[in-house]
Image (cartoon, rainbow, N blue to C red):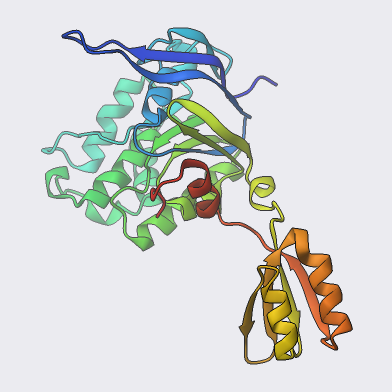
Length: 309
């Protein structure tokens, strides 16, 4: 089966006026997103995320390389009919309420439905806006506007959702609801390609992660494999004489005295040596477990900046 999204050697440079040098937004980037995956697209501000999304939506043409969306060239009407899109910065008609707005967007999508009112009511209930019938969008909070934006992205029952910062402006409860909605869409077999700076949300919903910086892909892969890299281990023991504690600290281990046991964290390169030292020193090793890195830790190591939340 063809990938939902495919970039092969894609490059994009923006020309600037008044003799200023051009800006290379993307430089020979390649990645794939399989159908049915939820893929997080990560990078610091200015990394090239929005340019990539604009390319796959057909808003921007590449200078080099090839891109495909649902097996079509970006911008092909056959693909666009199957895509739901939520840009980061969007504006809706402030004088409309949510029902009128979705009815308008449904007409724009040219989708034929037997009962438009029932579909709109279903979507508003999904995004928790069914209790605000008649309220004009101009009176919405930022989070409410974000919710109605997600509802319009779902109008066409798309196979692919492209979401740029879908939880922007939402409180923790709202982010949880969006997370549950994304997981429900995944269960339906939808493909979701989303960008977010809230890395805990990405970690909770995504199958795959792509990290770009300075217009280049610097890491891509399945999230469980990325998080499961065993660079540290946790060792739990029952007791630890002070001389032995000093010896394991010299190997770079940290020691934490807890209520019922003692926790040692050490680089995996030294795990065997530390475990043998503990056994021979009279400590009872209760468990030895590879530690799972967080997406935030991995992201900061890759980009070297305080972008994560």
